Amino acid sequence: MRKFGIISGFLGAGKTTAMIALDSYYRQKGIRCSLIVNDIGDCDMVDAAYSEKHGASVSAMPGGCICFRTQELSEVLEKAFASGAELVLSDIPGCGIGGLDHVYRSYAGGQTELAPFAAVISPRELSLLSDEDASYRIHLPGDMGEILRAHLQEADAAVLNKIDLLTPEETGQAVDLIRSVRPDIPVFPVSARYGTGIGELGDYLLSSSAPLNQPQGLGDRGELSAPADRLAWYDCRYYVKVCCDDFRPDSYLSDLMETARFSFAAMNANTPHMKIFAYGEDGDYAKYSLTGIDYPLEKDHLFGRRAVELSVVINARLLCPPMLAEQIMKACIDAAGKKHNLDTMIFSVTSQ
Image (cartoon, rainbow, N blue to C red; front, side, top):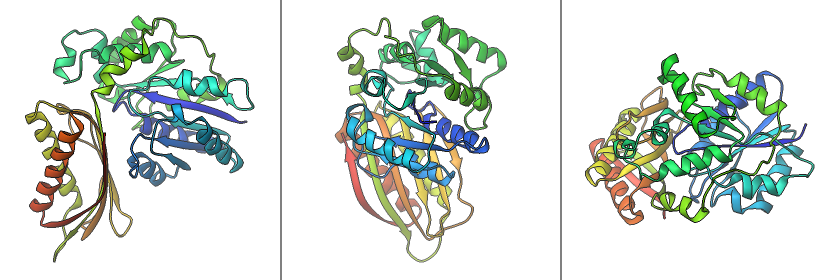
């Protein structure tokens, strides 16, 4: 088998967690899977490091969306297949639009079979489809709902993630809402974090192929890109070290993320998706995520002990002008470092 598929998704919907869960499921079935983790920034990638910690075979593609890097993507795919992969899954950064036209159609008719193009959606953004006031409550541009509709029109299957946060009744209502946009679309309710429903999704991706249907009602691509263009990218890699003692990494990372939450809220801005991956000198690590100023901090893995030094990578998509976003994040890193008596050395920053 030689198969390639895209796991697309809205900001913070859980694309990477879904890919990790699928990879784990396939390994249990004896199927060799490889992951491609893609991002716009040139900095180190949180998702690549976190996926590797879960035992996945990962190829990182920073520095731009795979939609416009056909030759490089072909080389990465060939290397993965040559290494024994039977199925390669890739994500797409941002809001998930464009993979069908710019990636799948480039590989149609070749030696590589295309798995269904799957769109990961979480309950948060679904409210954009049914509630005119939702964008104000979750601090996103109102026209983000049009991107979500286009995302569903483009997809071969919808993956309703984070059902562990919903009641069975709420899950049913969410599925109905998705089908109000695409009545015929297969919907897979899952909890990628806990593995619920991943087997059904995994079997579907293996047994089905992308039909490459022309999406209906997508509208003008320029208009669809407008709301996404108001979001800034911010990537940073830095190192902290305590002067003469040790410190609790999880307390430091929580303070950093909460400082960022309140700082962006104070500027009438938002953090649609901010991810931090940190690791110590002994290989211990943590991953934290924030999917909006009104949502709880997600702690995907915690440190098991105290530390004297820490390497930190931040990847963020922010509803804020790039220059202001960089200023706010620099102030947050400084403030959290001072609170924990840490010396901070920033190696690289990318914002746009």
